[in-house]
Amino acid sequence: MKVGKVTHYYDNIGVVIVKLTNPLQIGDKVRFKGHGADFEQEVSSLQVDHEQVDAASTGDTIGLKTEEKVREGTEVEKI
Image (cartoon, rainbow, N blue to C red; front, side, top):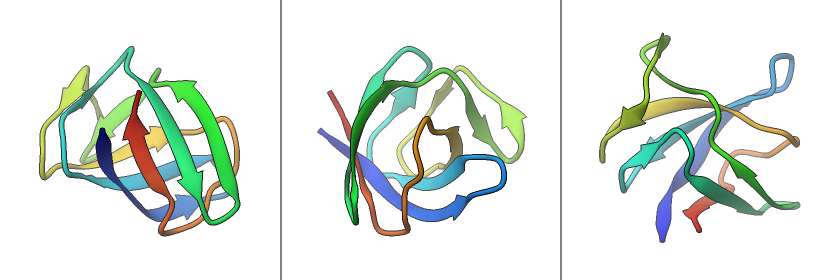
């Protein structure tokens, strides 16, 4: 299930910004696919408005720590 698309990547801290089209929570497994990325990871850190949260809702813009570099436009799917 698609949960969003990367709108920005902060290379210096390894964090992506994602506009959610479906809810996401700590512990979910996600896959980053497209624009040179294709990897899976567990959501271990999730922020909304620079505040650590356990879950985010559809329509939220989140910050998510990634294990690999991604580019803007990369699709994010919950698996």
